[in-house]
Image 1 (cartoon, rainbow, N blue to C red):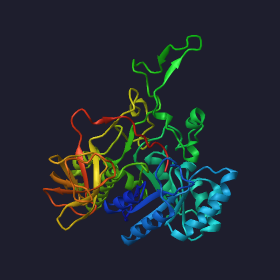
Image 2 (spheres, helix red, strand yellow):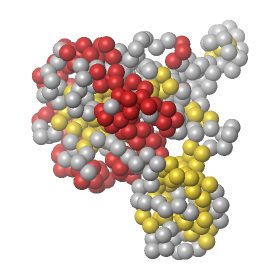
Image 3 (cartoon, one colour):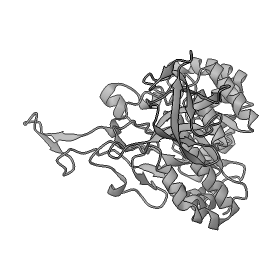
Length: 426
């Protein structure tokens, strides 16, 4: 099955700056979390005011914003969910992402005008489940991550054309079943299904025999221990034709705790790959090395195709460490330029006058440039900018524009960092 319309490119955002970045760098839609009832309690998330601003910004560009409300709700949560949905009614998101049937029912009662999407947390793995949610009024179902392309094609063939399929195509993979995990709750009392996951899937494990306390034995034969739950990251940039042929309506990127650099890199690369494929398969194949090179410039934990072609095996896990590859460091995003032509930025990582950095543009260009001058808000000269989130003005030897991202390539040997995991669910 070949979709005539391009699939939606759905990008995550942790805050208003990242939402704007996602839109400018190619997203068709953005999914975000509010301050309550989503599965990213540690993310910055959106206040209602920022949510309203983000939705207005997206709508100016003809794009959409979806809000997650995908906790597994307990009795104590229901009154708060009702109040929250009344507040969301005022800011008018394009859809709510929900997993709990009770929460779904509340949404139908309070915000019947807002589209409802079924979260991957609902573990929808067969077409009868999709048909069920369609009858309840859902406009879209996010597929369980454990489905193959063949199974997704089978879903498409057995559900109404108007019911959309959304599928994760890139990002961190959760070791549990579609994000439903008890490890965090068991070890720390923090419930992954209420948004407080501590990501124990990335921890290092050994076996200890009861009568020999303190004598640690690796679970896997490796003298450094083992990371038995630590999955590689999903990446389907090489398989856009297969995803399209399966009839998927929305290509979803994981990562609501990621930086603007990560979001811009992934959005820009998948945007180009999708557009190139719909222009011609030859153009898509000719540009494959560009896509792979660009997608490798954001943080990742090696790549896998997950469940799409076969069940994952030991080759899809990383047993000896929990580090991720980081090729570039995010320095900031250009918000404006002053009368002297200096770029106004909020600094995110340290850099200095004389450094060679890179301007990353929404149109796909990457322009090497030299830092000529840095000043603070009062115009005082600075040799470097050591204070995160300080507002600075930077003069480069190349011209910048609003929303350009400034990044720098990691030095050789510095590209592997301790895990900054985002893990499982939306």
